[in-house]
Image (cartoon, rainbow, N blue to C red; front, side, top):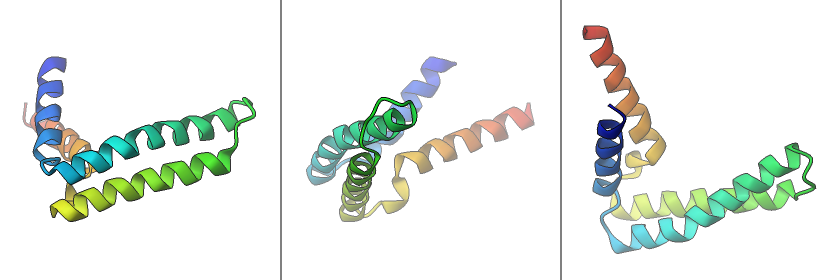
Amino acid sequence: MVTQMHVSLVKAIKSTHKTPVNRILHCIGMPLYVIGFALIVGYFADLHTNPLTGIILWLIAIGLFLTGHKLEGNLSAMTLIIIFKYLKSRKGMLVTL
């Protein structure tokens, strides 16, 4: 079951990141997203990180993601939306069982 979810999620992500520009923007944005998120969490975990830097990096990353999807013409295909749609479809399948 977990393998099926992984495969279909990877397939959905690959199908919404087709153009080289979108992939490059995501490759640039992903480390910024992770580092920004870590700085924000680190601040609240009392690790003396700078939350403002984290927020700025995180917002830049999201801007890169949005730009990539906008250029590709599939702005509604953001990963969170794909995950939400997938979970919603799974919930529907569970209800019908």
